[in-house]
Length: 167
Image 1: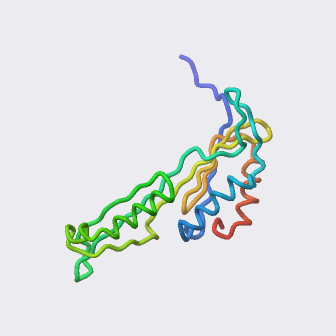
Image 2: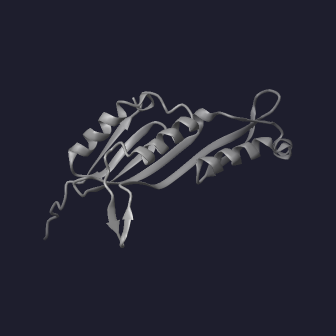
Image 3: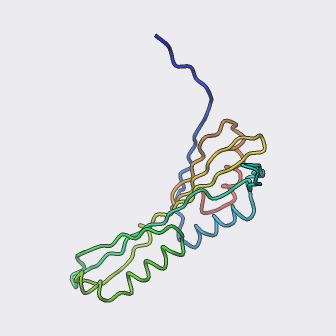
C-alpha cells in the first residue's frame, strides 16, 4: 500500500486581537492603508501577461443585524443585512432602519448593535521571495494562510504591532 508523502510546508497562523476592531470606519481605513501603502513589502508580478500589484483585495463581506423591539424592549423581529462592500452594507442598513413600514410590519422599533457586525477582507499577496499567500482581516483576528517562509509572519507581526486596533 502506498504512503502519503509530504509535498510542502504550507502554514497558517492567526493573531487574535485583544478587542474587536471598534468600527466599520476603522476597519475600512486599515484595509485602505494596506492597499495604498503596501506595508508588508509585497512585490508586483505578472499574471496572464498583466502586471498585478503585490497586494490586492481578493474578497470582502460585511454583515450585521437590525433588531426590532416592542415597547417592553422584547425582540420581536430581526433582519440580517449582508453587503459586498462597506458602502453597500452601510446604505442597506440605513435603508432598513429608515423604512417605517418594516417597523410597523415587525411590530417594533429598529435598532442596531454594531458590536455584532462582522467585517472581512482577504488579501492576495506576493512576497519578494516569489511566494503567494493570503491574509484575512476580520474584526477580531488576522489570519495568514498558505505561506512557507516564516519571515512573512514576522513582517506582518511587526506591522500589526504598530496598529493599536490589531493588538
